[in-house]
Length: 254
Image (cartoon, rainbow, N blue to C red; front, side, top):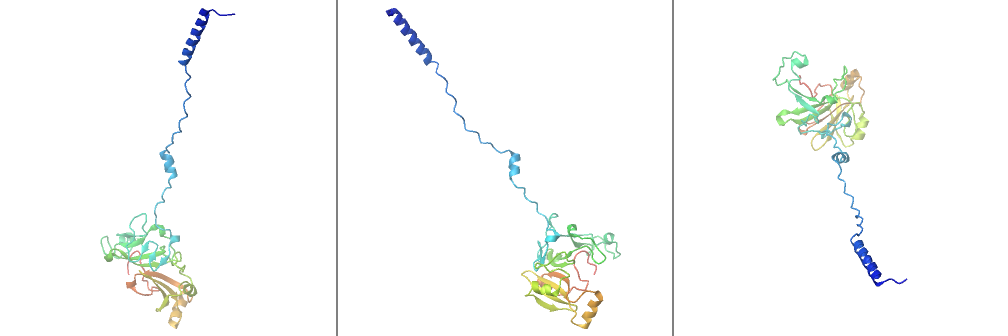
């Protein structure tokens, strides 16, 4: 069936109008995927990631060893650390007064003998009839800027830098310090180990004479046993402490 010219023109107009309508109705493009935003760690996550610094503290008793230089951070010729969290020894200005000690020496606050250098309570051990509870004592020269001049060991809890303790044998000392010099004193042989800033001195029982043997037999301490260990500044030289009462630390009532 043939279409009339009018019909053809009408259909053509309708088709053109439809195309125009469709061209104005383009489909929207799907949005492009956006990049994932970088997450900033929270303050709490950052704190967890960063290691917490270990607070400084004084060395434990088990970590101490005496050498010609000193005892841990307590160095001969240098003033002791004063920070309460780190110090090993401190000056107590009234600790030796009669009011504190219960003695009758007439010492009151302000007297030259009223104060003393005491080890930190963290190092004190249970006292016994033969042991006062201090594993070590410290001598300080206040006229020289509080320089440490002497450190004495009073128990076997602290060794030397080569592992020698009070109670060890002469053979132990000779093996640990083959290069040590030996000085003879009135009751002991003193093994001397020299360092840049001090002298480590280890006293060993000697029964080489009748007088020495008589004394040591009376104490029950065998020949060749280490009885005393101390370290001093070089100016102090070599000296014996055994049986002398010449110790350091605490109150000086001598």
